[in-house]
Length: 198
Image 1 (spheres, rainbow, N blue to C red):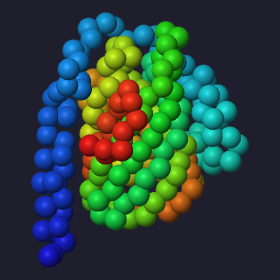
Image 2 (cartoon, rainbow, N blue to C red; image 1 turned 180 degrees about the vertical axis):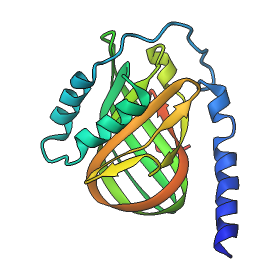
Image 3 (cartoon, helix red, strand yellow; image 1 turned 90 degrees about the vertical axis):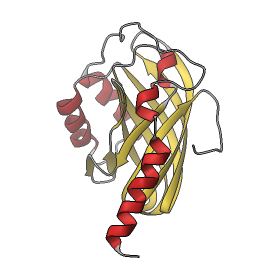
Image 4 (tube, rainbow, N blue to C red; image 1 turned 60 degrees about the vertical axis):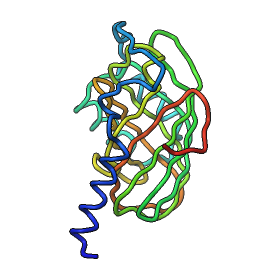
């Protein structure tokens, strides 16, 4: 199969996987909230929390955070956690962490995500996820389509965007292992851990 055929097939599969993700806005059985997003975090507060979480060895962290803030502004929530995954064309990702909202809400969350594309390898990483325009804690539980490797990578720190409606997730990752390439998929944030990546 030619490369162009493979790419076309990959796009079709991703379209099927993600169909309805952006338009649904919530997981089945939930209703969208209409409350306003809570106050936003200052960049200095986020930088301090990220440095504390990743440690001094996260070279490139400041550059990645500056890039995200310059494009997205100030978040009103963030997640600190860890994840692992692997890929050989088709990939999976599993993570768990703690959601912090600027109104003081703290909650455990989990996420999974399938992907497809030119992506090979496996890795374990710390994940610091900046979240924009989150109206309430219940709105976090849905699927967020995105493109891995599409945003920025400096040193050992990388980031990309995932979006569903007005809510944007910007996962910043720093970890060990070897995984490279570009892939298309989504993150599915849930209340309970699951081994099903979809």
